[in-house]
Image 1 (cartoon, rainbow, N blue to C red):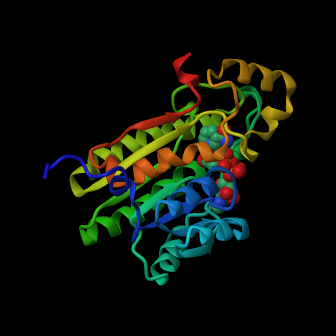
Image 2 (image 1 turned 120 degrees about the horizontal axis):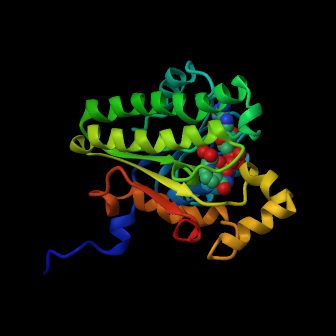
Length: 259
Ligand code: NAD
């Protein structure tokens, strides 16, 4: 028998693992939760609103599902989420920081409220939730996987979204910092940078015929990303297949950054 690589299934198998996914009620968070569930992981879904659809999709995969309601714009959500996650009786093996918001206005008109609201959800609570989960992973020594949902705005400037670009560029930096601090403790911290996906987040762009045409013309794959197309990257970064991958921001963008 060779000591070669495990079979594909074993490498990507998440059976017996539990993933906490923020903002799992819709869009990319829902698609990631379903992909992880289909790979075998139980799901703890955290969000502001009902998760009925996600619960049904995850149940279809035959894994446990728990829902935690929390407003991640507030710091007091962090201890509340950790307490409720502990009450499920499952260890958090995988954390997906997906919840995020965007506000659009020209930089010259941008308000403090649109700055603070976006930074609080996309960066501040994300960091402190990751700190809490990281502490637990380090305390029991069993390691884990942390996946931040970054953006093309982690690499590019964009227009009319100053706080969003600052938050997603910051998240790429945090991904690298946490990887440097925690890689030696068996925790993989990485990010996924979705390109232009068909979700609520991009509704305003798709509704603007000129922006829609311009964006589509620049995507080599020729179509807006469908949320399902993000699942494989999440399973990869959540699984043993990525055990030596630390601190990357993996674009899943139909080739946008290759242009
Ligand atoms: P979406 O608006 O459908 O989903 C955002 C999710 O975050 C929702 O589940 C929402 O409930 C949750 N959320 C927002 N504020 C919250 C709060 N205060 N408390 C709890 N939950 C909160 O959009 P999406 O496209 O699915 O976005 C998911 C992530 O992907 C975001 O971080 C977004 O920035 C990122 N992203 C999206 C795209 C895209 O093209 N759609 C591209 C790059 C990055």
